[in-house]
Length: 289
Image (cartoon, rainbow, N blue to C red; front, top):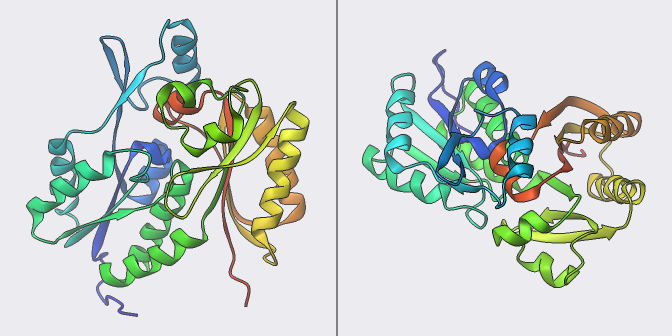
């Protein structure tokens, strides 16, 4: 493993707003976030402009679902130019290429920087991407070279686990991102459904349930299966107008495992456009030695 000896990091970290890191965590971690856009008809909002409550109120009142737009290539170019003023290179970590075209805009922008910008497909979304972003920032602080950090990121990507629960499949179905989940459910869009993201970065169904209690129980059982023999890890619990559920999930997890880091976060407007109300647990189990 190559280690940089200078005090300044050898690379800066960039991501997009569908990582759901939030303003404070991104700022504290030194991450540049390139925002996507949410559109209600002719009215557009940068992801993060609306509070979660404001976003859901607008969506509930709208006759049609909002749409989301990718960042233009020029926005990525500007972000990379700013980042390269603070470091020699950039690692840019983004939402799964199977779920969004965002990474293609990043790749095209990166072509203008002669190999100094390295675009990495998280093959995940929300904090499934966000945990990888934060791992990249830790690698930078530890003095890793971009090459070593990308190798580490690939290992982290394989270890990050995500389970997302939604109260209804209506938004995913209308948005066309339901994929294999649709064959699992047919027309039963009123069920509470959990899904994960497979190794290829696409949605994979996990369970379906009638009722919140059963759905949350299935969620925690899946987490237990994925944790295996590991008794600790980093956890992030996402909530879309479901904070009481997120708090119950947090309490259940901290009773069972040592949470080296624990986050409860609000899903942003872009992710919430596609999922509607729901919850998620994203975690990075500690390696068992």
